[in-house]
Structure formats: C-alpha cells, structure tokens
Length: 371
Image 1: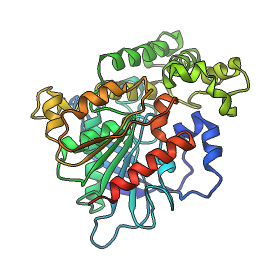
Image 2 (image 1 turned 90 degrees about the vertical axis):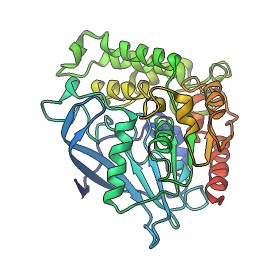
Image 3 (image 1 turned 30 degrees about the vertical axis):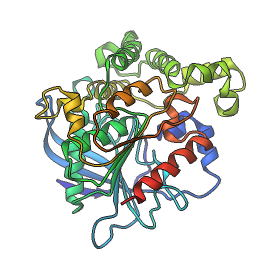
Image 4 (image 1 turned 180 degrees about the horizontal axis):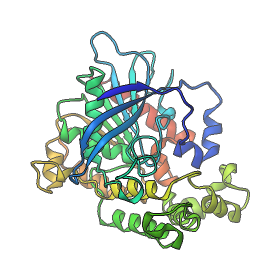
C-alpha cells in the first residue's frame, strides 16, 4: 500500500457544483480553502464480490493539519460521482468545519472516474468487467488509507447522500473508530423504492444500442441523456417544480424548456456510462444489515451503533424519503433527527440554498462541538 501526492489538475468534477453552476457562483463570493489531492494504492484489494483488484486506487484530499494528539480528524466520504471538493459548503472559517482547527480527509468513491473505476482500470477489469463494489468495500479501503496516515480515531464522519450511506457503514463496521457521525439526505439501507428508481436510470443508459453491453468505443450519448432526464424527475420535490423554483437558479435556464434541456444535455458533463452504472449498483446494494454478523438484519445493525448520530433528512427528498429516516432512527440508540425544512428535495442535504446551508452548518457545528 502506498500514498502518492497528485499534482495534475483533476479531470473529473464536483457534481453539486457542476450540476448546479448557480450554487458554485453563490459560494464563490468568498475564497474557499482547497484540499490537497493525494492517491492511496492498495495491492490485491479483495472486494465483497470476491474479485481481487491488483491495485485499488483511492483518490482523496486533505485540508488542515493533524494535531499532535491525532484527535482532530474529520472524514468526508464523497457522494455520487463527486470528487474531494464536494463538501466546500461545510468547510471554512465561520462554517461547521474550520481547517484551521481540524484535519479534514475527503475520500472519493470507487467508480467516480478518479479512484479505481471502470473507465480507468486496466484489463482484466476495464469497462463493464469492473466488479461491483459495495459501500463496505469503500469504507474498508478508506480505513486502510487512514491507517497509512497514522489516524487511529476520527472526531466525526460526515456524509451527504452516498456519503451518508458510508457514514452509517462506518458506525456499524468500526463502532469505536469515531466519536460521532452526521448523515444528510441518505439512509443506512437502500430500500425497494430506491432500487426501482436506480434500475430505471440504469435502464435508460443500457437501452441505447451504442452502450453495447458496456463494451462501447463512444459514450452512449442518447442513453446518458435519457438517464439525466430520469434523474431530474427525482432530484427535486414536486412542489419545487410546481412553484417553478428553478427560476431562482438562473444557470438552469430562463424557461422551463431550457431547464429540461439543461438536465437532458448537461446533467453530468463528461460522465462515463460504466462509471455511472457502477456507482448506482453500489448505491442500490447498500445495507448495513449485510455487515457480519447481522445476517441482513438492518434493525440489529442500527442498534449496534454506539456513537451519537445527527440524522438530517430533507423533508422533500424523493431519493431517501424522510419516512425511511424516521424508521431507522427508532433503532439507533443515540440519535438526533433534524429534518431539513426545504422544497429543494435531495440537494437540500448539500446546503444548496442559503437557508439550507445555514440550517445544516448550524446543526453540524453544534453537534461536533458537543462533548
């Protein structure tokens, strides 16, 4: 296993800011601290599927300095197709996570095009032959990464969406490794309705003849366009669409037709179809109940969580409904539920609007400061 500092400009993207350029513009008023990018390599990494990757690469970023006692580390695991910059809305002086006091580690999921992915893995695991990796695979890889940095304990794990999935898995797989976790717009298991949604989005890509079972030489543009339209129907609340709240985000477009075209043609710029599908498979297979020794019992797995949990669902999230969060919270011994009061659906959990941003930052700051 080895760590490597990476100096090249990332060729991937931050999904929250590239999907929503208006968000990036809103956040650019003040200079943001930028993470330093690194790469960690694990030799002969065995996945839950049984496949062994000769070299599994985890790209990650760091901000701040590890203190002498090693007790100021916060882990920020990435969300869908995101990179190490995906938590800028939480980071900086005056925000919940100040790198002047904390050492922040932002890890990137397998399949994002930068960490080991179908698009960058050599044979025999290139393209559609890349094995499905689970949330537990990702958590175990990052645990090895942290060990290489001599990090023995975390102040917190904080995650949005698939990052929230990882936060819950950390609390189950390594119950004594952190002081607390925060989960925004994400659950400890992907339930049936979420799997149906993801399968619809996968089907949109694979229905394009150019996809060719994943063995394509040119990206299946029509399939990716259809995927973007299906995704857009779930991303925001129904009330968001009825009230035409897209008008408050000019980068989406000035008319409804322009908004549709934005999602149809520019949803995730430069995305690779096999990468998109891999991370959706990772998403839909997530279930902390699958962790040994719980044998599929999600309620028992949740009861095993020892640390305090700040659970922050969006009240209008269609990906991770607030009812799923309330169900799970019943079984977590030390759980505070703070529902984000927003019409912005799933992206409320990433502090998309100033109101959502303040709500999350205030709650996370207070939670992290608590003893």
